Amino acid sequence: MGKDLFWAITGGGASSFGVVLAYKIKLVRVPAKVTVFNVHRTLEQNATEIVYRYQHVAHKLPKVIFIRLTMMVMNITGGNKKTINASFMSLFLGDSETLVSLMNKRFPELGLKKKDCNEMSFVQSYIKWTNYALGTNTT
Image (cartoon, rainbow, N blue to C red; front, side):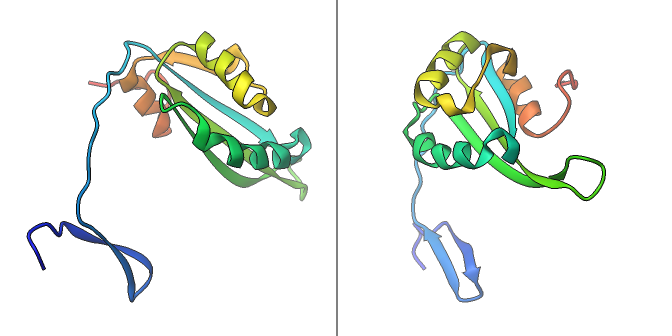
């Protein structure tokens, strides 16, 4: 194996893998404040259509927006009634007004509102992304 071979990434099975021969890192300036949101939608709140639309929109958003979708089954009545919860979490390198305006133009189905957004430092946003409570000590 050559000196340019860094590592293999395991894939779908014992005999399936990929090989990374090179990678590039581009550093970007991070503003003093970034904006994050975490919006939840259930089947009853039209999650199916919103997720469908997300698949067509997410990859076309500007590079200053990172958005992820997670889905899970949740119990909504305390009994046996279950639904699907779609959670859209985003990090935007800018202020909340700009984010809401942009999202409502590009992805209006989500129905993002300013009250859904939190402006914070990039370090605080990392804490939120890792599911720690806001206000967790960062030192």
